[in-house]
Image (cartoon, rainbow, N blue to C red; front, side, top):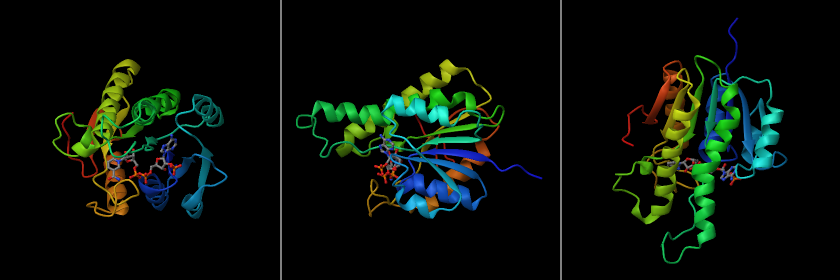
Length: 228
Ligand SMILES: NC(=O)c1ccc[n+]([C@@H]2O[C@H](COP(=O)([O-])OP(=O)(O)OC[C@H]3O[C@@H](n4cnc5c(N)ncnc54)[C@H](OP(=O)(O)O)[C@@H]3O)[C@@H](O)[C@H]2O)c1
């Protein structure tokens, strides 16, 4: 008898997080997924067999409470997907300081706070910890300059992931900074290049391949290595 694999997806109310949950369930995984308020899970309620938990990533008390509720569970995959675009337009002279702070908090700091609480629950030897980064987080990317703050927040996330990996000393763990492609979601918009199915199918194929390899990898949904 094979044991079902167990995944935790952070930020699954819509878009890529919801798609990841759908693909994992299609592949027979056990899934715990978070939305900001589990009483209103939105489209996630239509995916059968998912345990829905509440989490606003920016609230450390809620993070601690989630950790308590997940105590004793071992995950093959923790995928920290949630993120925001931040204020628009990203005109440095017009944008409010508080909005810049909230963007960097959500995209660069909160994901590491989630990861540090759940690190001990990732399966020894084969666990995968994935963060939703972006190709725009590559510091030499010439693209997306109209969303320069968002770009910088993903570059900051990549830096924070690197620090985290150096600090935690878990060489058995595969840690992925993932670029999902430019995807048709609320954030990606309707002119994006690929749909949620293509992106999420690709990302999960890469996760299965990375399991057991260990180390830190900045890759896209097709498995191409990206430059930091
Ligand atoms: N779409 C693209 O082309 C693209 C490209 C590169 C990277 N990404 C990244 O991929 C991830 C998902 O993007 P998406 O396109 O699916 O965007 P989306 O449709 O806007 O979904 C964003 C998700 O993040 C959740 N979220 C935001 N802030 C949160 C917080 N503080 N606590 C908990 N959940 C929070 C949202 O929850 P609510 O529904 O409650 O707001 C929603 O589930 C993001 O990290 C994004 O930066 C996307």
